Amino acid sequence: MRPTPAITSTESIDNAAKRVIISLNPKAGSGPSGQLAQQLQEILTQQGYDALLETDLKTVVALAQNAVASNSLRCVVGVGGDGTQTLLLNELPAEANLCVFPQGTENVLAKYFRLPATPEQVANMVINGRVARIDAGRITEATGDSKLFCLMVGCGVDAAIVHQLAANRTGHITKMSYLHPIWKVIRKYEYPRLLVSSPEWGDEILDARVLFIMNIDRYALGISMTPKIKPQDGKLGICAFKKRGLFHMLKYFLLLLTNRHHKRKDCVIRYVNEVHVRSEDMPDAPTQIDGDPCGTLPVTIETVPARLRLVIPPTTD
Image (cartoon, rainbow, N blue to C red; front, side):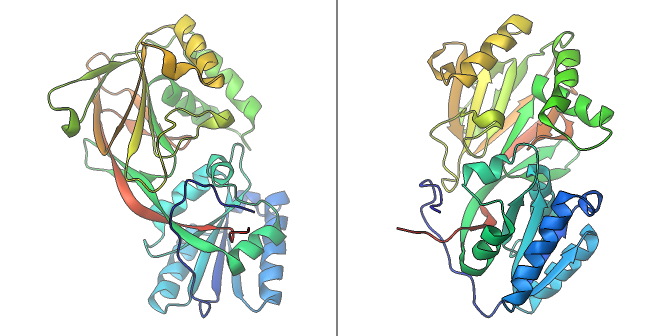
């Protein structure tokens, strides 16, 4: 399997590092994901690795910290979707390598980097893979609270949908789970003006109604929003739509699906290191990161170069 061509540099993993911590959501322990995680643990143990399967996040973090200190950590394997990987990015030591075992609804991060999804393939990636130091993003609220993200930030209507989904969530999320929150939100959403500024633009303020800040060029359903963004370029991509209302929202969705949004005058795409987003119409408009609820405006969003140490498959010719 080839890693995505967007990766320009990788590092080897110390062969002496044998500790592998497999992090599993406790709610998934008795389901298919839990069974796959156990299979991965068995394969790695048979290959001579010290593979631990844990469902408690605090235990995972403590084990990772100790293994980093003793130079014995090979990687932490995140068994789950994009939200699982973002949680681990925020909680693990910066020196920890993260290996994705995709078991979520969209698995955007895994699909973008062409990461495998079977225990055997993931085990091979742990044993023979390399580390790519990928840019992350950071979102900081007015309170000073901040979070790292792997994929993107959404401000406005898509964030309102994510918050609505989380508020009514009763179990495992599927693609069908989004239908009711989408319909409930888009019928009544007010589409406030989102005012976007950047130190790189001087006094210019970008006026948007729908806004996405991308760390990699991939959204749900395989949508490409900011095609020039690369995972190791130290940049964020901005995709801003200027018109409001249900009709325009549906139009923008179709344009994104057909990759024709960048041809529109009411769509602005830019690349920056840092942006500030606020709204005078709705000062506490919601935000989301990587498909999970975050907080509210105003926020500062910036790139954090080479923050994510992502394990990728070995390159083949």
